Image (cartoon, rainbow, N blue to C red; front, side, top):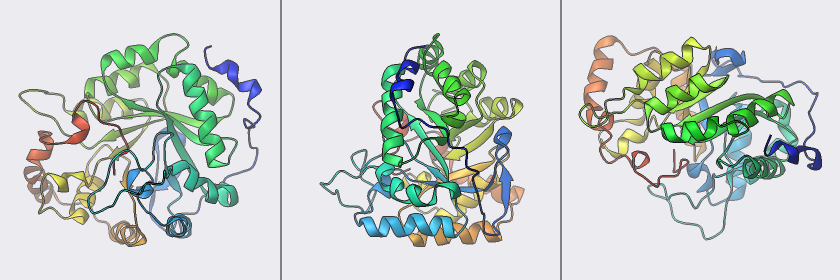
Length: 327
């Protein structure tokens, strides 16, 4: 298989035999599909928002705080750094800040406490292996808990990934070899492509954008098309882009959007981008006191979200978007 030949020469690739110790600190948890691992329902997104924390010590405090509060699922990617996009209210730092580099400083001393998920971007198996090698070096570990194919876009993309020896085969091989415990993929564009990926591989999880579609131009209902297919195969479903509607619909409250997403039927957990301890505390308060929205409130929120559902002005629905932009 292309790419897998790199494995013997990479001395960083060693399967760790130690047991992980995940502690939710009393937060309510759910099991994420066939991973069998329990998680609090809000996961930590450590993409562009996190990379735009200018102060390294502040970033390290945030990471330790996450673990101390029971938030041990950490989402990162080979591609995540502070060049991807400038979040609202942030200033561009001329210094390159890579998410995995920052995480590695904490992973090195608290590895057993962290469920570590990263992603490879390249569609070339050899290059994807080099990306994984770089990720493991930056993360200062010899394995990840989950490896995802980053940003599945179209059916043509799925066809490429499905070619013999390409990334779907490669991820299954890496799982067999113990370099990752679980495998999955992410995406936020064509629902049909997400559904096709579910059918092409034996994946453990799917990371998918909150439902949005245009009934006239793009009648692909992500909730109805992709999520049930994933659940039928026992996959864990992770929802992202949950708070981003605020950029389209200014009067919506972040807390209401989080509660709305947690109340949706289908997704197991949601992934939220983080840039401060204050944001973490807000999420913790929601988790500890969460009660599902009633049907009337859900309908009201859905009506408010109509511009978002129609993907008006949504950057990740445009060509050239790179996932990780303050999401």
